[in-house]
Length: 249
Image 1 (spheres, rainbow, N blue to C red):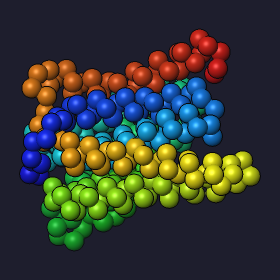
Image 2: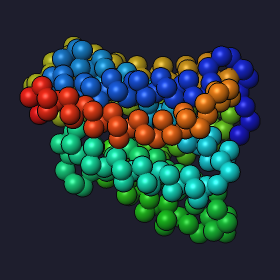
Image 3: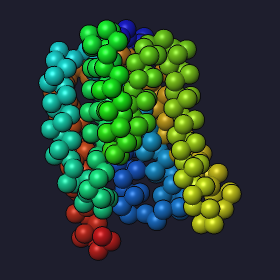
């Protein structure tokens, strides 16, 4: 993938923002009452994270020195994150955390760009990975967004359309959730929930399209690399411990 012209924010800076917005989302789920404006606003801001991580997953697919090692890291941290994920969200065992979503998306890219797929094979593998992703936190949206970003490459017009589509899909998904809770939320409250949900991906698009300079941080690249992997399970564990200490869980 070609670099976007320098505009200010490094990849690591944008990922740091994504970690913060993810924390807001998870804080909302653990501590705030669903349906209230503060809870829905923080949840919506947190939707910044998924498109950003899918975008950088595609970038990492092309830039990594070892796709096998990349996949192994995702797998290891997906396993490490599963128990904190269960604890923080009281999930059932059938639901996998978002690191699995990224792992399945990465493996789909590997198959899609592999020799077997070029020979007209591999479709069944991709379908199987899509099916598995349905049981993960970001469901089939993560691999779908990943393939869309892969197709867009670094063509600005295609990326603009992709981010608009991603934002619309997130809004439609939230609208469907609101429709299922009819009688709990009125029309104005439901509309606000949908708008809040679209805030995160819209900001992600603005950040990538008009803020990203295509570079990594000049210093501490290895520290930041492992920080981004470790932040997910660690912050979930801390949220669970805080909730237990406060007696809210």
